[in-house]
Each structure stands twice: as structure tokens, then as C-alpha cells.
Amino acid sequence: MGNPRLIVTAYDPHPNRGSEPGKAFAWAKALSKFYEVHMICASEAADVCKRSGQCNEWVFHPLDIKRKPLPGLLHYFFYHQWCHQLIPKCMEVIHEIKPVGLHHPIMGSFRMLPSYFRLQIPYTLGPLGGGETAPFRLLRGSFLPMTEFVKESFRPALNYACLMNPQGRRVLREARMVLATTQETEHLLRWAGAKATAVAFPDAIDLSQSPNDPLSTRLQQREELRQNFRCIWSGRFLWWKGGQLAIHFVHCLRRAGCNASLDIYSDGKGIDRLKQLAKDLDLETHVRFNGMVARTELLKAYLRAHLFVYPTLHDSSSSAIPEAYSTALPTFTLALGGTRVATDPQAGLNQTPRSIAEWLEQGTQLVKGWIANPDGWLTACAAAHKKRNSFLLDGIIATAREHLCPCFDGTVSQSDSMQT
Image (cartoon, rainbow, N blue to C red; front, side, top):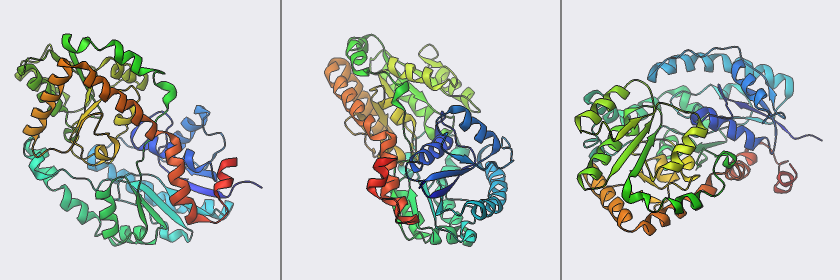
């Protein structure tokens, strides 16, 4: 007898991308350990998944909808179209396969959700994110352009306003389980009516692409710290991800007498502003802009670096942290939102400061200490290497077993999961 059938809905699941496409693929992969996954996604995404050979057991029900490249909040206009077409497609598939339920892993934000209550089957959501915000004391010193500062200041109010939508509240209220990426988002979801909630880190990493023994490389780099302390920052360019703070940090290191440099792996609108900032701080020869690269190239860059500087102000999660840890690279973060969940305090400096000035000073003193005593840096590398084992697919499988499977039926037991 085959596994029970479960619908998983995601516009753009992708086996080799981070952010929401990667999360969707990972959670569907985990659920396929317990269920016959029936994936409803865009036709282009279905083709990508099939070609990967990593999900041959899934059954695809593609929806012919093409994504429009809309930036920022304009993306929600497209996503509304997806939600509108998704429910009739779900009804069609439900009539065809009689599933035990449905799981919705993305959109990672709670701000817009399809009307799953219309389907009359059990459904679960998440991990949802988006409820994370930066404390105002940190916003004030984060070197944001004024327009970005204003937007970030209004983010908490926007989150609550979005959850005043009766349709969205009903989706949350009638869900059997709603997973959240952080406690901040979980608090908002419960305020909006979600009855059963849990916090779950949404990302998983594939260690097959990572170096087998990164600690041996770190040991060989011991003496490099004094010659050129190499920092790295990567991610989509968004001001709240803190690229400007990474540049200011390297500026502080150099003023303190450290021969430090920064590699930036990012692209998009705003990069020219960062280049100008580096020029204004007389860092043109010490800050390199590399654009966006494939994951394999990024992992090599992490392995060459000595510190991952990632001062994001409110990520829901961060696939960048597990990838950095997969190369035993310590991190320097503000420990806000998803980075608080993902980071290890022993793997660098990952504690929320009272101010940005304090964060810059603490980081500068830490790096000076590492340069004087590289054994301290190696200890942080070892902590990062150990933490990487927390981000394997097995963790998502365990979360699905504990929080999602009981919502659908009683046929999936622990012994069943061991056989799949």
C-alpha cells in the first residue's frame, strides 16, 4: 500500500536555490518521506524539479502562470494572481486524488495567503516569516538612506495592519498547524488567530557541495590573519541586509590598525551606492564587488575568507548562515530575527548589541584579539563547523514528523517513517 497523498503548493520550488524556492523544495522533500507528494507549482518550476532528478517520486500538477519580474511590494500584485488561480486548481486535484491534506510552505510571508479554508480539507502552513523587525535603537545607527529608514520604522505597524485582513485571519485560524521562522513571527500569528503554532528554522543545506574537511583549511590559514584579514558579505541587495554596515566595519578595522578587506557578493539596485560609500571611506582598494555567483563559487569564497559579516536587521531566516558554517566560517551578526535562530554565539560575535556603535567596537576588538591569538579564531571556526550539522534535511524531516504529520492522519507513525 502506498503512502497517503498530500498536496504541497509552492509557486517556484527549486532544488538549487536559496530563499523561498529552496525552502519550498526542502520541505516538500521532507514531506515525501511520509506522503506521496502532489506538487502544485508553476509549469516552469515543475520542469526544473523534474530535470534535477531529486524528486522523481513527486507527482506534478503544474499551473500555467508566468512570473512577472516585479520588485519589492509590487511582487504581491503577481502573488495575488497566483493565489486566485491556485484554489480552483487545488479543488481539481482534490477531486482527482482524494488527499489527506495540504501543506503550504511558501510564500514565506503571512501578508497574503490563498483561501485554503474553501477546500474543506486539513491544511498546514509554513514556516511563515516576515514578522521580524529591527529595534529602533539599531535602526538609528544603521546608515540607512532616509527613505529606507522611514520604511523600516513603519514595518511593525505594517505587519499588524496586514493581519487585520479578515480573509488572512481566517486562513490562519482554520489551519491545523502554523509553523513560524522566529518567535517574533509566531507571536504575530497567534495574535491573528492561529491556534497551533511552533518555531522551525526553514532552511536546509546540502553538504555534498561543501568541503569535506574545512577545519584543515582553517588551520592552514592561521597565519594569514595578520597579513590580510578577509571579510565577506553576500546576499540580495536590500538595504536592511546591512551591506553598508559591513563596509563601515572594515573601515573601523583598518582605523584600528588591522589590514582588513571585504569581498561583496551581491548585485542589484543600490550597489552603486555601496561603491560610492567605499570610495568616500577611502576603501576602494580594500572592498571588492564580485556580483552574484553560483553557490559553488560562493562556497569557495567563504573558504578563502576569515569572517562572514552579515548584519541583517530582520531576516526571517538566512540560508547564508548555514552555508557559511558549512565551510567552518565564523559569523559577525546583530543576532536579530532569523540570524538569532541560526547562529551560534560561540561561532564569532552573534549577540544583539545596544547600539550599532557598540557592535562595531565589539567586532573590532574581537578581530584584533583573533589576529593577536589565532587560536581564538580557530575555536570560533570549530563552533561554526559543529553548528552546520543543525541544518541538514534530517532536521526538517523531524519537524514535519512532530508538527505536520499528526495534522493529517494517524497512519504515519515513527516506524512508518523509518521504512520510507
